[in-house]
Length: 294
Image 1 (cartoon, rainbow, N blue to C red):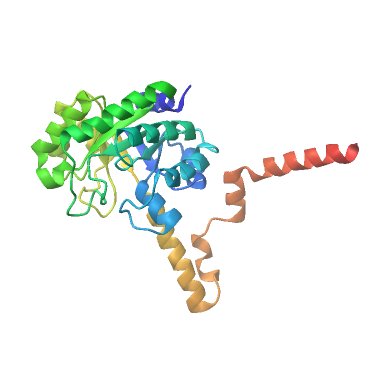
Image 2: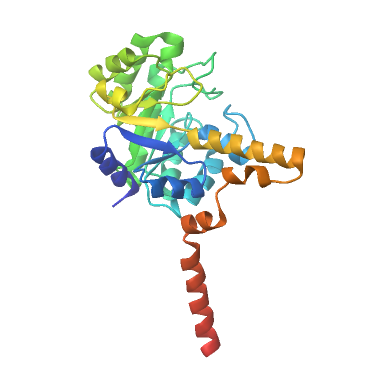
């Protein structure tokens, strides 16, 4: 079963499907062990965590594929990837799709911002025309047919903030007509507005429940009541990791010991259990013992 097919099966099994952000392979293992059926790699997360940069379109396709490959090489949970604006014109978008599929991704979302993009929950976003975005989608759909026709393409519209709700809905309809498998309605403010999207879409709709942004912390039950099919949590665990790490660094600086924050840490055995460390160690011992026997 292809990665794209696995994602489509997960979408059938859980409604709404929670898609949780995993900025690295270890987090992907954690999310999988908890029981999540779909994971996500954020462009902002890659910029922030892997490169120490803000999410302003400064990372490129290979920067993303490096982290995609790291995750998919160790974890079979279907991975949706943030493709930003696709890194260029139609041929670039096609290359993005093919590289993502080759790297093991199950799907991606692509947005209708200009190349000098901004975080979806920040002001002053600029959008390309509806037709240009449709060209991006058509290029993506055409490209996936060669390697994985089930690869899942989500069209994100940022129009709600700059052009209003009706424009966002109109754009989304055009994106579906161009071949998008689903719609990502970014920075929507109310359940009523989500309902307006789901009522008028013939494909699944994704809600981005990111912290400290424009969208309230709606529950899965609330979102299900208005027809939302997917709920994205792009950087929730990453934010928690960052605050925990900063507290440890501060404790070491202030007190010269980490003893006071040990209760916030994962133990060595918990780490080993997550990594299946002892099975690797046992295999290594078996291989070495065979070599010695000779």
